[in-house]
Length: 213
Image (cartoon, rainbow, N blue to C red):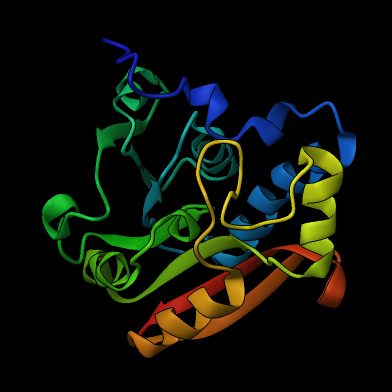
């Protein structure tokens, strides 16, 4: 498979996985474990799972190891995702800003971690996610808090305060609280929440489970 030089290497999409700071590394790995719990995958029936914006495939490997009964798909805008080879996992390229990018009512769970905050307009992508979920399916979301503690940590680690500059690769246009508002307004019900490393003012990441009504 090709690797288009226009796109980042998959390992560069979430560099925090390999951060030299052990707390940063733990937060980003632990968010995967919390999101798996929020997804409620331990029922009797196998489920169809999608990790949208899967990057290098950390979540895909975790899901596969946790319960191989489920049908797992990984998709990303980056075409380098097609080079990933995980036994029992389907891979594909998708653009969430394209309403035709995902099939209708195809998935029981969609993981969308640290992705929506990078899009200026989220109304269309949220509708695309809603369309792709089966009735009663869950959307699992991770997003930055962008609170005072988050901005302080950004200054400490990256030397900048403004969220308009966001991460090293893409700006943050939204935060967890505003995304929750927009997703609920689109016809979802919030059925689970989490935060890392601590709740309240010490949250850097906000984690959610939303049920499609």
